[in-house]
Length: 241
Ligand code: CTP
Ligand code: MG
Image (cartoon, rainbow, N blue to C red; front, side, top):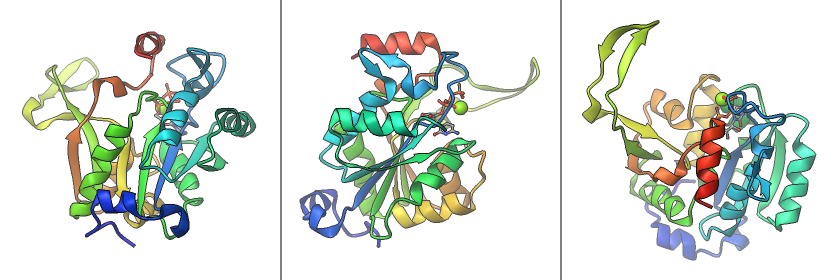
């Protein structure tokens, strides 16, 4: 099934519950958070009063676009993830799976829980807590215009250079570069095929779709979708809550 020919407004007005769900979210939360350097996986580090994972989970639960959510949890943190979903009353959480060794593997494992009749699949990093309903709608929209995938992205302010060690190899044309964020939206079948055959070290899902010749559209991202990577990022995002 594909979203081609279906306008987002129509998709939204379908009786989704009667159809068994059309827009599924894979919430990638299984990373260890090495660069954050906390005593627990990044998804369970505190942001405000709750674990980081709670913020994106609550926002996706409340999104009018989202029908169901699969969480990829860090190994041995499946139970705390289930309890957190219960505590938040996140009834859209359909499954919590044990994540894999890489982000791509975590997404692949989570996609196994997404039913065949899913129309669109969104993949979001739990490390980007401030996802909004607006951005979810923004990435879903172009799927109805024939795009295979949609990526929110920001222009890059700095000049970006390719280096080998400390030596510059090339200076890239900044006008052609953007910084990709999540949530990324895909026609569900296209994502499934790309992830099942894709490189397990792929940095994002769009790159796996691109590698198979899929058409991926860029839409404006949001600076507040900052990915929490370092303790400074966590501090900054907490001021935006
Ligand atoms: N992720 C995942 N499974 C993995 C690795 C990463 O689900 N095996 C998720 C992370 O939980 C995060 C997102 O992918 O939400 C982006 O990854 P990143 O920011 O790199 O998180 P970590 O890998 O946890 O951090 P680090 O690279 O510092 O260890
Ligand atoms: Mg990582």
